[in-house]
Length: 137
Image (cartoon, rainbow, N blue to C red; front, side, top):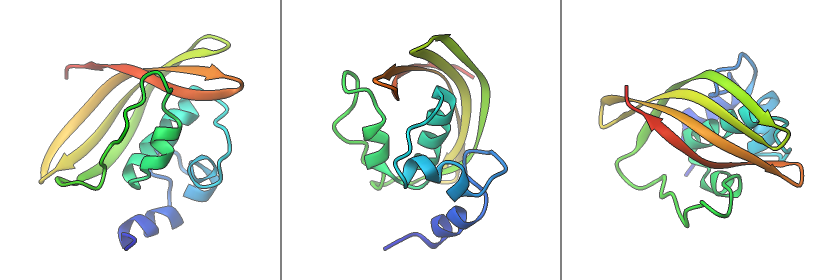
């Protein structure tokens, strides 16, 4: 059964933090299969996919060399995503980039922050998440 709160999110503002409707922002990538133009767009769409429990999109946009077999997003305890802040996006060359971000979330009512510098690679014109370094807060 679809989560009503997640359906409302899709109709209003995109979870990635940009001031656009989901369908005009990350929905283009998550639902319509459009390739992200930059690593930052991919990172934002991946955050949005986490908020919507879209495991297939997350796995499809994860580089095959580092991709896990499953994320088990719907297994307890459920993560409630609260917000995303992109600190910087650095394009190191035409096909490599990093994105530093902070994602806030709650599990069982307790608040957490994920501060990561993620690495991305573009292959045949398509950006993939490779891996990241988690920074201690």
